[in-house]
Image (cartoon, rainbow, N blue to C red; front, side):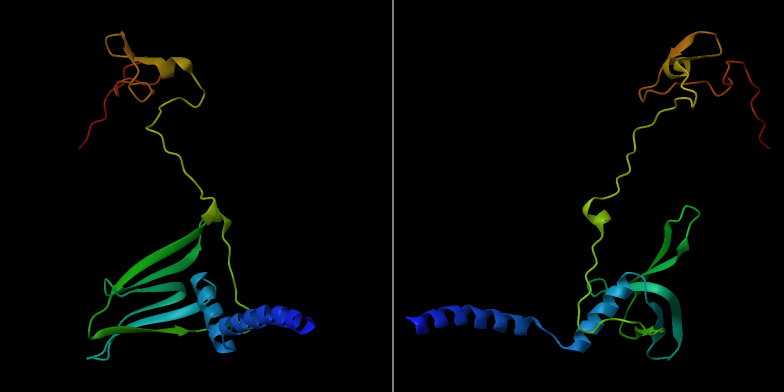
Length: 190
């Protein structure tokens, strides 16, 4: 009885250990995976060179914090590079599509050494991909900044009669009239 109980406990443990060992990879594969993940997060400086295999001439060289995707279906390489930040602190990117052929190929060089853990996989969660940043765009409204209700309901035309609002909710106004309804002279174009 005691022997049977030990077998029942040992069998699942051996199965879990076998599955765990098959899921393990060597340190080089883990380090390679972590470097690729860091590169795709624009943390690795790279140099990407396209060259003609027949003439041995460089066609294009891109250097910077770039992520690459080989699109074999379209025979092209997609390169996205982080180029800096704007005034508001947002990141600026450039995307390049580079065609490949039987005599045009590329190589990618990592120009700086990177520190990665060869024994632990790196997992990156991005909450903004789970809850996206949504921009709302309406059909338009020409309301004034001061919230003037008269500007939202109608405008005065040259004849002095009031016109109705346009279908988007903003006022329609003759371009020859200024904000107060005074007639203005049109600009002469040369």
